[in-house]
Image 1 (cartoon, helix red, strand yellow):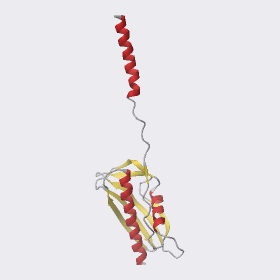
Image 2 (cartoon, one colour; image 1 turned 180 degrees about the vertical axis):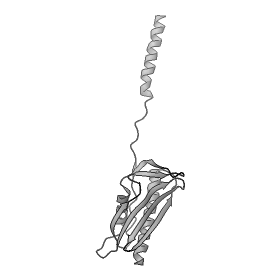
Image 3 (spheres, one colour; image 1 turned 90 degrees about the vertical axis):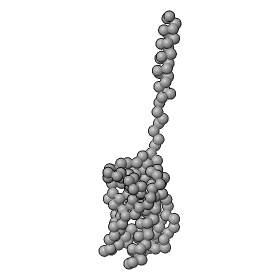
Image 4 (cartoon, one colour; image 1 turned 45 degrees about the vertical axis):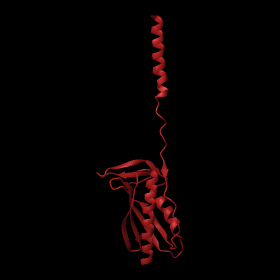
Length: 170
């Protein structure tokens, strides 16, 4: 009887303490960071950007807008803040020359609209006295960081096309 008791007691201790290492949760994965794809090519138009600023609530975290206008953070993040991402993208699209027109860009929205399955970049563009507010969208195929990066790069390319139009109209 004592042997059975000690045997059961030993097995209980081994199973309860030994099982702890079996049931441990894996270490949390570090956040994934995404970038915009580099600009495919320079446009052939030159432009100087006097200011690129971000008035959206977006920082390095990807923001997701839900149907009820609730904003949440995605587990994925951007490698830089929105103004730095766009500054690099625009620098890759437009060479700078001394006589180039000067444009300022104010980012109003830089987010993933989950209700509409779209990436959204809203910006105000100012060239002298001419001011335009535009919303650029691109469809999301899923909610992954990689797809968000792909879609937001398409939005940035649409911004470039709008800037080209502004330059041509001057």
